[in-house]
Length: 241
Image (cartoon, rainbow, N blue to C red):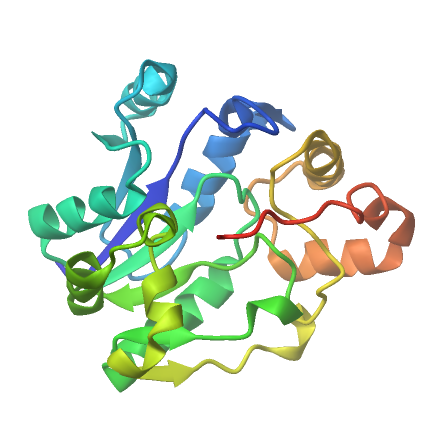
């Protein structure tokens, strides 16, 4: 297998419990994430990686209903879920998606996957601070994930799957991905952590009523509707450490 896409998902959010199965437009958040992920060209397998806690039984049940594979593992050591899936499927490349980002940019993910294949490196790095939070994915090699699994020791390394690589970038072959200009809107927040985020994302979902709406259209819409951006403008992203 060349490319495995792993969606990490859990119901136990402290700020917005059960967020990934909340209704979004005519669907739910996880449906948006999965269906947009399926549109990424080059992906051969998608697995949802959740925890073995009882609270995440609903995620497993959702996967069974939607006929998508579900893998369950440690709640706190998210990295271990990824390393185990890496051993099971032995892909060459992995795309990491989080289930609280219903509007991932399909075209951006495809370009990143093309770039890592062309350059045959461990990691695609980019400046995530200049684009809307919640639209990007991570792309890395299975070899890089094995190294992270072997070397990561800090608790936050295990909770935040690739953070070891960002702190120790010199240990990995890499390229800097040049982000397209149309994505450079750091004032936009399209991830789901709070009730304010949910209100904004639901407005977008109802405005377009299309799970597959291109991210370019969403950004264009928000750039003309600055009042909508105020809904979650004051939300602070939780620090890693």
